[in-house]
Length: 343
Image: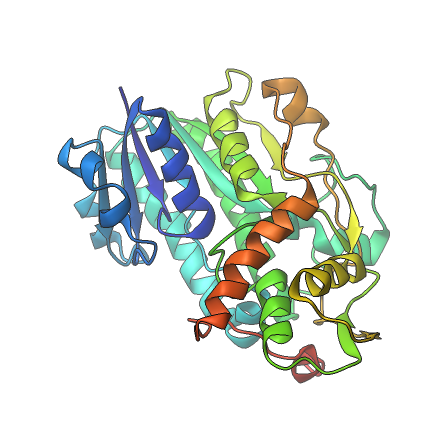
């Protein structure tokens, strides 16, 4: 059986990749992260006993943490990163520091511990500035030029680290003798996805005596939301595809909706019966986003199965229950965009 490492295996997408791999039962999986808030021991106690799974906790911005991992891995999923719009606006220096160190430390570790293939988790944020500055093709293919519109804007620090990561792993693959695959995620959603994203923010607002009219931030901006199960399946398919060496793929859904549609659908699910009003969204937020999935469909048959309304309902149900039971955002809860206008 293959030996697989998931760096960032305690995160939202990383933990679901771990679950998908273990459910297949054909590999040994090590999940590495700063912490594991999603209950590994309870969920995978049997697999831990059978030595099919282990979790390694450590601060991987330090090269010393990699010494806990050992070696001999066939495949590495490099998912670890700081994410979240609010985090980039509040702590842009930390986004740069952490994400860059994670990339460089991983490469240093691979020099001494060769792997066959590495998949790097990138993002559609890498070309967000393209649309603001030059316009762009929708649905968007992987060939669109990567661009940020203003290096001084804190919102783009995450995109900068993802561009750096893509270039670092793709070029180092040739030098260090491993195969590299890059996936650019496109608004992946689902239960327990954290508190730094649009859906948990909207549910949080509806859960706390929502005013009428209810503000719809960036109402005419568009996104295409992909359920986490589709994202996990697509990511593993990209890793295992014979055609994927040195390639870049979009992983997401290609049904484009407005933020107004999203907000009203969540309001319907939450039983809200008031009015809505348009409002300005977070600074640096791109106007439209929808991926072209032709390449991943052609190369490894990826096709998202979960309709966006079903995906949204699944996420909303988890967060509605969480807030109804007195839960509070563990980090990155809703902060009004008005507080960030004068960045």
